[in-house]
Image (tube, rainbow, N blue to C red; front, side, top):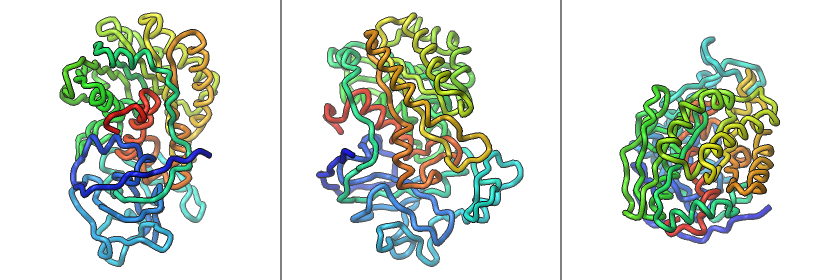
Length: 401
């Protein structure tokens, strides 16, 4: 398996606030990982990080307001895993709470004795208040799957190089809506959603400003204020995604949520990201319905480029319907992208299914989930944004990577 060598060195930094530049540094590049999150279910837990750490630079509460002290609140065991010290002030949910949720819980997993139980879940700070953010240096190489850039979007990037105004439309379920990103949910550290982070990275690289269009449809996410990184052009951002939607909802609501906006603003890049809520759908059907959405976009805007985003996998321990066929959809998306390319349509895949499966080889799902079921927390949101940017533009071409 291909590995990524880390060669740069960390400089003294502060870690008490959200930093958009750091947020878009790929976790697999360099020798510093910023704000990797972990969650202690038991005070005896030993939390493995994505890399074996050389030096812990910072351990903070999820909102970044509280700093924890090595030796007082945490330490590393001989294998480089994070452990809690006696009397640690780092939050620990405890097994009793995590595996002892009320009867109204919508999540069932097996506890550590293998018994199916109602399990803790929650949106917003209900989940993330139990997570801590770890920044550290390491000497390792990432040997797991990571997104690659294959150059499918040269036509779109040429527009940016030429200073042309462009429109990017995102359309998907709650993950693309921005669910569990702290900015969308309205609490510290106020990190943007993955689509917002990625577009701002694109604007920063090409000297553009970002104009955020508020869809104002009643069930879409809040947008930040417009931002300017330069005067070469404008990226118009449109995101009519809705939480809870299946790909079938995406088709049935296409005219109001997509067609009308393309008619008004155009579309140079269309990004579709359904699948998380389609646990029971056959992979061939998912592929066909994604194609149905993309075909309708291309009928409205024949010159558009298309990015397909496979979903991260949901909680693999879920036993009551949340986890199904999601991990099987990516293969069909890959073949669909090939079909489009053969037809002359620039099309690629952001492979978040493969990325998330690779993370699960080192981490527990609760470490990076924003609700313990199917949403990413801020750390995983950043990995979404980083992977999307790599698939679209490639970090090797970036001036500010």
